[in-house]
Length: 220
Ligand code: IYR
Image (cartoon, helix red, strand yellow):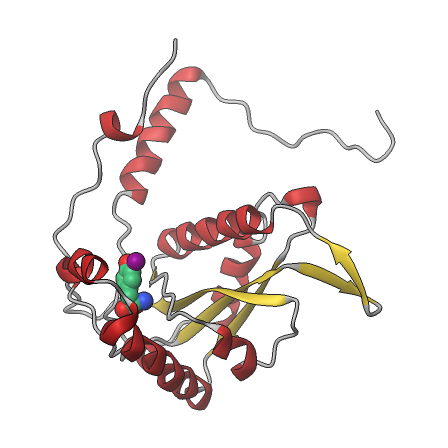
């Protein structure tokens, strides 16, 4: 064995079984919806730890794991974030977003009010490290957008598979999160995700996903 290497821990399965599993996974993930109406039902800290640990298994450039998660349950902090987010969203909905953008958002009936930011038991803010700081020295990181995007996707999937819901919220510009959460200059807010149970009477937009023939082409 090469120095610094270990055998891959991998469960080999038959082609048939792989096909069945892939279908099951699609069916399970196809039930995921972005949720904007949350219950205040509690979710344990251990659950959040598990979900972040799952997200942090994501591949990353040179295995630098250029992400940082802040998990907020303090009502005081959630209220601060809500106030700052709604201020930015007011500007977004009243001049910063184009007419075409506002029209594209109509099916979602969104506006500048974000009650879920204090109702959901947890706000998880994902930061992207644009560079590392080691003993005060800047160290280069690689493909940080790609790496953090993948970690976000894995977090969203973990949340869903754990029986919870989340929203990928981007109340832009999001630099207020860096200030409110007291994060260093090398961390840029990437996503703000309320996490919890959906409200009992939660409704979601009646939208369809693209059929495969619009998103997949085989070259055989
Ligand atoms: N950030 C705003 C607007 C918004 C933008 C997109 I693109 C969406 O898919 C949904 C909303 C908001 O959260 O309301």
